[in-house]
Image (cartoon, rainbow, N blue to C red):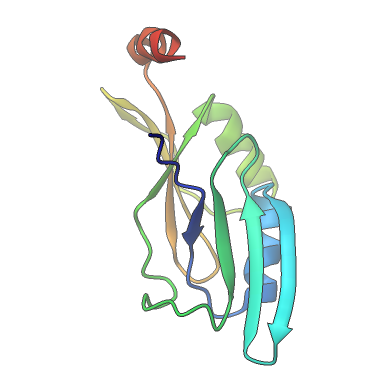
Length: 132
């Protein structure tokens, strides 16, 4: 039986500002933006190439404070290319952190939620192909 993570809530203070950042700066696809009522707005955004989306909005019942999320890690193909692209779009991010288990970039959204972008090391490519 497969279990697939398909949606992660990201707490934000300003939905429109966050949506603009994720779509215009990070290149996420704006899948859905629905105001269900005066108290409920659901926005679903998906990173390019990802099977998992994020949800931002109003009245979604989140208990996390905006800016407190720091546990999402995204796999990227080329840390140098992604870093250059993000900086060209005006996104503040830390430079590439070289580790034995990958190359990492850290990005914060306008509320301070932290994303870690990881380029997998070359030795992991064989393991990924075998699982594929």
